[in-house]
Length: 63
Image 1 (cartoon, helix red, strand yellow):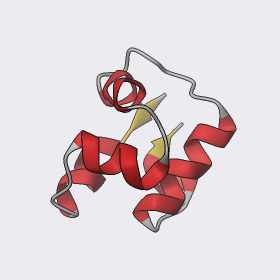
Image 2 (cartoon, one colour):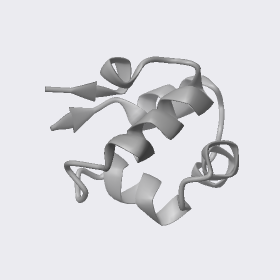
Image 3 (spheres, helix red, strand yellow):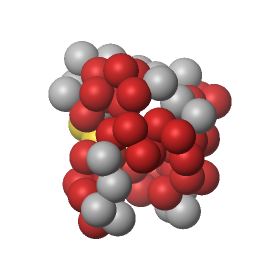
């Protein structure tokens, strides 16, 4: 599953660490998702990232 997480984070001018703090998701997990090493994150993780970015889960993850 492809994602736009890095692009959306850059639009906010946030580092991975800043997104990690705002979403309460480990920075390492964000890195894995952005590098497509963690293709299917848990639903709760996806929801937390979307909430922190102010978007829907569908906006981040592309099927």
